Length: 271
Picture 1 (cartoon, rainbow, N blue to C red):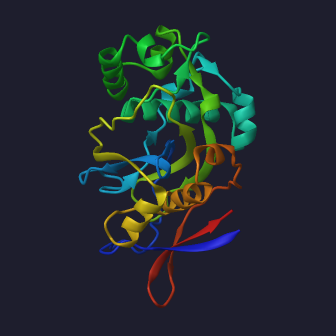
Picture 2: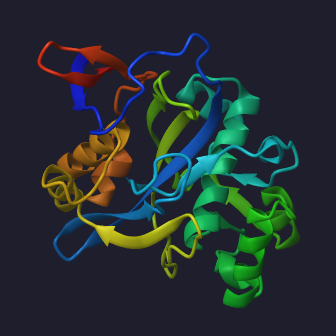
């Protein structure tokens, strides 16, 4: 384990852990990757300033698990749920929900659909084209449609083989909203392009990890500790193939508030 300190956001007033910390909600996030002209790039969103959790932060697409994500009738391809359960060290029903949430949230927030059929068809075309896909995204956001219903109706299956497991972070106990989040990586499938058409973000773009890290260092971007660590790992990987091929050590990480005498920091024990 390695101890790592992160700056505590200026202007924060809550400096003590509540007697009853907020409950954690399971969540999943995905680092969408591509090899750009000058190295590996990752797709990031800047959350709108009015968001209750992580306002104005640069983040990867993702969000909380929907109860319907764990349904047994979710069409599935690639490593099966039991294989993923061993990889992620959690029960199969949780794995199904987390992997489904990862793929669903990416589609809702970027339009990239990590799914396919036996013929290798364009999954967006299987939905009926761009306009139909846009309507499906809104139906998912509005919870009028489940991800299983979306895929099954189009003859598609979730492509779990397109995802790689990267990290596991839990929101600190001082926060009023808390998430138990699994981080994944995925290369953007050929023919698809993320668009960032979500009401939760006011900016969406491809960035080099080193550039957004430098922007955060200069005070021009806001990053949470898990995002910093994941970006550093992507920068070190340098290419999509290396990032997808790596098998980093993974353990739950929950930063804690520490007074160092010289100031307050968020301290994390990294695997």
